[in-house]
Length: 294
Length: 328
Image 1 (cartoon, rainbow over the protein chains, first blue to last red):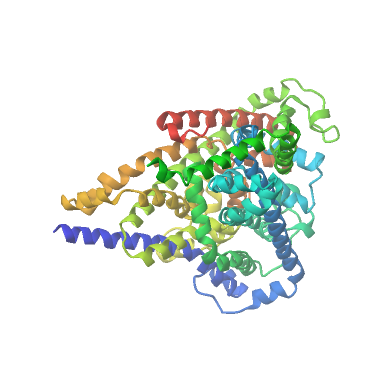
Image 2: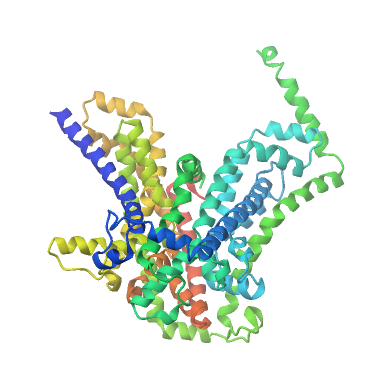
């Protein structure tokens, strides 16, 4: 009796997880299928989980007449992700090292200096005015990553990794006459590489997916990232549909709009999907460590 | 005993002695040593000042009659007129606050429920490869930006071409105009949030469950407890402290809105604003897009101050609940 009840429950559990996992993947099937459909059939019959009139026309269109725009946005995203991640990792690990040095008198002060910004924030508006009017970050490459190069959360995560490095190693290096710069670059960075990879991945994901910074700071089309280009395509369609076209800048991409959106979706998700299987475990580790240590 | 341990001890002692000597060395030397620490912290300090501390001081904007040429600090003082404006258009402020808190509360409740459910169920399953594969799949949406989710949602929800309306039609039901039904769209936002972050949240709870001593389960099984009893009497009670803690800490973020989410999923569709006009969206619409700074500055200050109070309260509660979890 009990075992049959138990077994039934177990089958139900397997089913629940299988269904939810399927739901997590189905939207991507929709996107791939949409990108391989013909525009006219989508317009007439609607979206579908199976391509309507299997064709590569949309991709030919994107890499043909729109190639320059797409490739520019794509390479802008790559540049922002690479530059942003490199800068962020350097700034973050250096700060994390400082607050993890044993015996440094001001380490608690520096830790609180960073922590306080998680508690209290001036909000979007002063941030926006300072960034555009005073720091002149509007329409600059710098503006697309500099504001995000120190995530306090990731900094504390990194500091935890540094603290787990045996202190004896640092002590013996100090006795050998190594200064903090030397210890940081030739001991802490190599020994903290798991932490380093973890925070690099979190940063890279954030920079690749970000469209807040371009939304706030960019109007020059040469600086559009792939996410922001995507946003403009979507917003244009939406506003055209609701009769508010004047609210957004001129149309960026001419038809085939529906299939182009889906193709862009696939192109944007593709790099993440390719790297995901290899990198996933670092994210899991980072989340678990981060949630335990706050 | 002492002698046995001896070979190790002298080494350590001499090490710390040497270190002491190094520490009590010339003051200049230690200052120079520390100076490289300041150098390392400097980039971070600059970033924090530029993008966190100066914006805090920018909150004086609320007492200013802002104009672009004079900037934040040069614009003429306006006394409390921005607040008067704030109270005179209280309706907007209340709507934005209500939407922010309502959406955050819904995200938190449903997100926690699904994350915990996934973690508890995964904990019951025995097939290693099944757990591994499904966990990876359920975590994947966390890596997708809101704008991409918005694009895919559009193909599900669009009135003419959307999958859902095709389905409704084939079932003989009325088609739904999701993008002009603000209250129905709340459901969409909540479901989208579950889709994106339930797998992420489950990782934390699953990690907690992996840490539970297996002897509890063994004892329960020997006593003849059913699977359901084990879940409700052992697994879930074990998770309660983490759930309460995560919820309390979540209270601190109740007034923070996700502009990217609303922009990505609704494209600022005016028809949806009755429920999607959260504080961050309001500030973006009125100030950054339309250049009306007075009211937006007042609501920004209000969000900052009340947000701060909420964070302090959340920490206090979390600390009261569990001393170790207190963040400061």
